[in-house]
Length: 105
Image 1 (cartoon, rainbow, N blue to C red):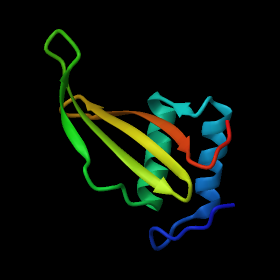
Image 2 (image 1 turned 90 degrees about the vertical axis):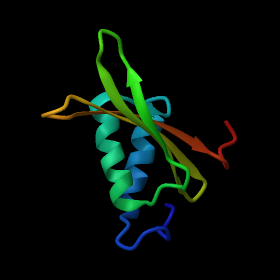
Image 3 (image 1 turned 135 degrees about the vertical axis):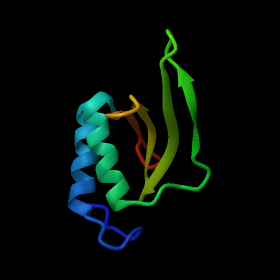
Image 4 (image 1 turned 90 degrees about the horizontal axis):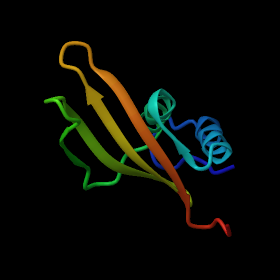
């Protein structure tokens, strides 16, 4: 188990559960499942500097706000694409990819 040393109040067990879930799903979660993981990561870790955000066009004039950022925890890197659509009632979508520097795979 990797211990927390990044953010005060970090829940190491919760983050280990996220890693297990990502591993069980091919190191990627998308949609609402990705959004839940993004919430957990944002509560427990600080993203690296250099967050990239901007508007993307999904066709027919639909613009979505997209941010791409990275969290690091021990040897694990979580690359996150967080997307919000809708103006009055935002709907959150997310993709989380897991990378591990120490993984021999």
